[in-house]
Image 1 (tube, rainbow, N blue to C red):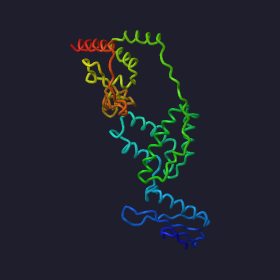
Image 2: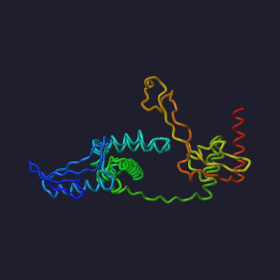
Image 3: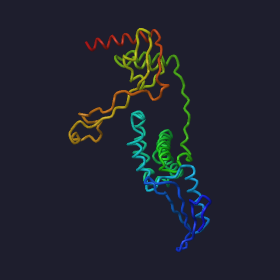
Image 4: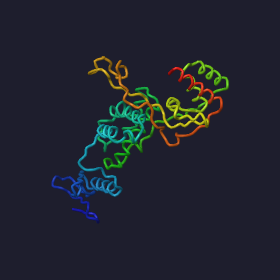
Length: 302
């Protein structure tokens, strides 16, 4: 029997003819030593396995004992218990869930978590684009979701290293955005002005560079007509529905098509980042447009 200098690892040849290695990698939850066992046909092979365990132990990346996580099991745990609002936004959570349930679990969910390789991830990305015809942006979003989920698994000791960090991410072609010409802007403003209720939000989005969710999430409490300032601090959330009928008796598979559907998500949520929360000064034409819009709303209420 061979033993290293710190006395925590041993290599020996058993009666079965195989070489065996034992490594103490830490302490279990019950206080007992956490010893791992490996075996191979040659001493060189088992020595390499022992060194690998020692490296993981010394770097603090040793997976916990007694847990056989599959990729599916971990992803479901992560999306249901860890990456959830209010830790992240409702929209981010919805995007993660689509990636997990539609792409990741069907594609690589059956793999053991500690056996997942960069090649498994790269094959998934390629299949999404080449076989299913999905865009590189969709595959890249799946890549980021998987990377985030497995980073948490590493931090919590369920995984030694994150294989996604070694996988080649889907290539994204940067789009060059061309600003509107003066003539195009005039046409847009003309059409927006013909809309009885939604025209103002298009003018504001065009003039102030607001995202669609920011424009749709504006409320009167965000506007100060006296100082000509507007505060951007929330965005419109994608609606989420549940069936309002009993036992889905309406016959509609998706709750969004149920005649008695119930909205279960808030209408708006905070902007994605702190930088997105900002104050913007309103030019005089926009201020006048907003005043007319408010007067029109009040008239309709009356």
